[in-house]
Structure formats: structure tokens, C-alpha cells
Image (tube, rainbow over all chains, first blue to last red; front, side, top):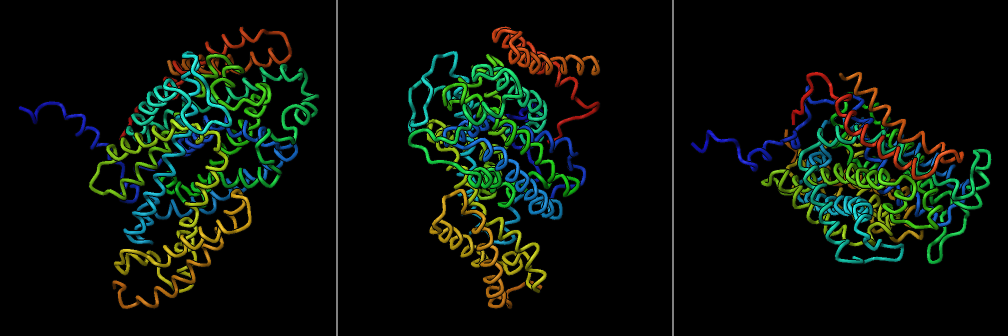
Length: 461
Length: 61
């Protein structure tokens, strides 16, 4: 009798299997529109309201902002297209199963835990952003630039409500949230533009001819808010390039681009970069300046666009938190192979929601995003070297799998030494990623040649 | 039906962005702009899913 009944919620959720552990089959490949929608939705996000505002707080000048964003975003698109996408379409595996072949299960486990924690914190920032809009009708006290801890009980309750919805959507899977993002992204982008346009008169601008004057004198003045360090062209350029370093150079988007029919779909990241990380950052900077350098996204969006602006912040937060939480679910699933993905995603969602209660995640977003990319980047360099360089040197790809090793010491040492050296470099965190990538690349190639020679007898025929 | 939905959805996008230009040049109040954006949002989210739904498509997760 029981077997004839509808499958339980557990059985239905377990059926949401998505080829996580094997190459994507040809009938599951997605068209270019899915990736345009995905990247546009993911990068026209709630955090764009914060990042553009934080640039204003950090005293970026107008020329540094516009030029830095142009160069940095072009470099980011090229990183997706030439580093990540070609490997994704050739292997069609998630990052995590790629790492398992290259680094062995032990190191993959460590990486996955670190990775999932980073993704959870990032998704948490998105939930915080959405909460600033949800809390508007409740007259909730908004977190400010200096706040690091939860500011009220209302804030915690609102964050938990938003976290529940975001986690539920992430459990439903890739295609569902890609469709959701595809519907939301054109509207969200226009809300950013409309909100910024509507507040320009508050800054004294009523004709486009005066834009540059107002931009340099009232928005991006070059003077940081007290207590904030100043950003230059180089800060903006490297931030724009590396704010998604974990996704492109760090190869996390192997998990997404493995669904692409062609490697050139990597260029669709330009939709996210130039709509989200250029126009939207400029718009949020304008909103922030018009609100006397307020950075809470809900109030500044409401000031520009009313209820539609507040709804935009909520939706923008969700469309970014969902794929991020999905990635966290994949990362942790590889670490806990006996768990179904929905259970892992639910657990990650709970951790994410708790993290989201801390406004520090949003107020120190620039530093956190740079740190997050830096920590995960060396393993992207390892994958790049393993896929492209080792075969050309007569060395073997996926050596951990071939030699049945539990851990690739060359990858482990490369990761750790790169991070140690990067943190010791006398540079700000925004600049450590570039030298770090080359350090990881060289170390992995050198150490692999030693390890493979030592373990030659273990290689499977 | 899809063409009609697409037409209304695009009208929603136009209502979202165009009023802000009029606020910018000083011929529309902020309140009217916010109301029009709200209507534009409703039109977009009601009709865009219908307009963007592919014939015979299904979620095969």
C-alpha cells in the first residue's frame, strides 16, 4: 500500500540527482542563453549595491573608477574564456571531481571544506543584503559601515527568514535557478539604472553634460570616509579582475561551464562583468553618494526606486546566493559522498544563514571577497598546470588517480606554500593573487616532476 | 498568447526605466516614478515567465 503512494519528500528530493559525479551527458548541455542569463543574474546582484558604495567610501576618484573597471573586467572575462571554459568543456566534470583525480581524496576533502566555507560566507553576504530590504517595512535598524555584530533581534529574525527561502531554492537545482535568474536579470539591471538616474537631481545634476563635473566633485571625490583606506586605479582594476578569482582562475566555474556546448561560452561572463561589475557598480556609487555615503543596500535602493528598488535588492541577493549555495552543496557533497545533495545544501544553508547575521560580512565585503579568491586560487593553478603543462613535459595528468594515491603532495605543498608566501608578500590583499598564481603554477610543475619520478612504480597500466 | 505576454512584459521594463529619465529632467515627481516602477515590476514578473517559456520545455533535473 505504502509503495503505491506518492513518493515522500525525501525520495523526491533525492531524485534531484544532477550528474554531479560524472561528466555531463550531451543531452544535458545548455544553450548560450542559459549562460547569459546565469552570468547576468549572478553578477547583477545584491552585493553590487554594496561594492559600488564601498568604492565611494574608499575614496576612489572618478577617472580611477571608470578606467580601473574597464581594464579589470576585460581581464576577468579573458580569465573565464581562456583559463576556465576550455578545461570545463573538455572534461565536463565539476571542480571537485577534477580535484579528486588530480589531488586525491584527502586533499580534495580539505579543499572542499575550505571551499564550501568560503561559498557559505559569500552566500551569507547576499542574504544579509536581501535582509536590509526585507527589514525596511519593519523599521529595522540598519547595520552601518562600522557594525561587525548583529544589531538587533529583528535583524536576526529577518536574516533567518531570507536564509530559509534562499536555501529552499538552492535545493531545487541548477536549471530552476538559472531560469529564475534569466527572468530576473533584465529587470534588475534596469532597476539599478533607473534608481541611479532618479537620484542624480539630488546631487545637483540635471543634464548629462555636467555628469563628469558632478562625478568628480560629489560622487567619486577621491577622498575616503574617515577610517577607510584609499583606493587607487590599481585597487579598482585588481578588485574587478580578482573579485571572482575563485570562479575563473580558481576554476570553481568548471561546475557551471561543464554544461556549455562550446568553450567560447566563457565569453558570456562579459554580460555579468559589464552589466553588473561596471554599470551596476557605477549606479550604486551614485546611490551611495546621494544617500550621504550610506552603504545598506535596502534603504539606498528604496531611496532611488521605491518598493521596486527594495524588491530588486531581495531578488538580486537571492539570484546570487542560490548558485553560490548550490556550489557549496556540490563542494560538501564531494566531501561527504554518502549524503544526498539536498541534505548537504540544507546544512550549508543553515551555516550560511548564521554567518549572514553578522554585518561584518557586508561591511568588509571588499576584503573578504579578495581573501576568498586568494585562498582558493592556487588549486585553480594546479588544475591549469595539470591539464595543459604536465603532458607537454612528459608528465602524467591526474596522477593521484593514476597512482591510487590518497593525496597529491605536490598539490598540497603548492597550495600551502603559495598561501604562506602570498600572505608574507608586502602587498595589500587585493594584489597578492597575481604573483600567487605564478608561484602555485611553478611549484606544482616542479614538485609534480619529483613526485611522479618517485612514485613511478605505482602508476596503473 | 506568448507574443501578447512578451509585449506586456516589455512594457513592464519600459515602465521600470523610462520614468526615471523624466525624474532626471524634472518633469515627473519621484513618487509617480516609484509607482510606475512598481507597476512595471508586476507586469514583468507576471508576463515574462509566460513570454520566456519555451514550447515543450520541461525541467529535467
